[in-house]
Length: 172
Image 1 (cartoon, rainbow, N blue to C red):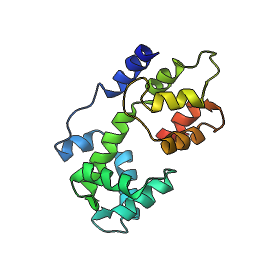
Image 2: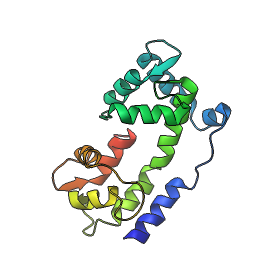
Image 3: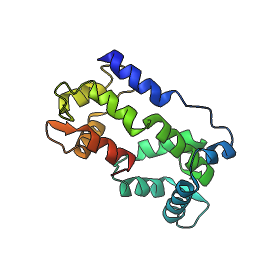
């Protein structure tokens, strides 16, 4: 199981490159995506040139996430060094990094398929927890994060991983 997971998650990370220049970041997105990000940034920054921690938290909540203040501050610090706010360029960098870490839907689905022994399109909550909490390597998610992701796949014991992936990537 670990080898299967590593094979499919490696593909999602293989194209990661350093993000030191805004031109490079802009080339990562289509004009439509940039326009959507710009609209979200302007809306949540209330027209200001920076997005504050509270504004970013509201933005994430509108997308269905439930980040803590500490998680939002860490994201902002990672994006630009300031745990209280970020510019549009730093916001794009953060979005690019987050999307690259996720990979595409097919890569993610293939990783979960390794654990779907019946081919039903579902995995158990315990299996999801094992995967996300680092039993097979990688970064560990908190119990709360596992529960939130499980809800995206219908909750209960049988998690529909394709539904969860679609909700995570905003493609449903």
